[in-house]
Amino acid sequence: MKYSACSGAVRWSGGLTVLKPGQSIDDDHPLVQERPDLFTEAAPEPDIKMPAKPGRGAPAPAVERATRAPGEKRTMAKRPGRKDDDGGQAGG
Image (cartoon, rainbow, N blue to C red):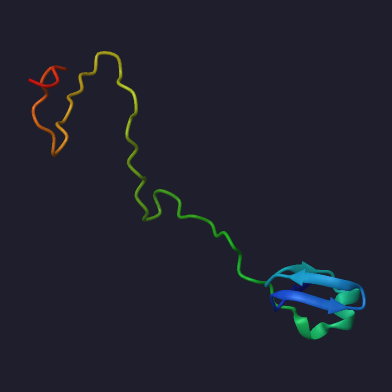
């Protein structure tokens, strides 16, 4: 297995092929035979790596509950920048 070492459109006897860095291709592919300078044996770094598992130094993220549990009382915090509510009475 070979991996693309370049990025771009490559014109060769089989037509036009777009290559991305790290794209894999079989060793016996005609493009590899014709243009070996465009490929490498070295496998690329993975695009997505394994995340840290909770308990291995990374704390579990805090999750906020969106709904109230039965019997739970919640208070509403006043929003900054608002004047006292006039009870729906607009104007004067």
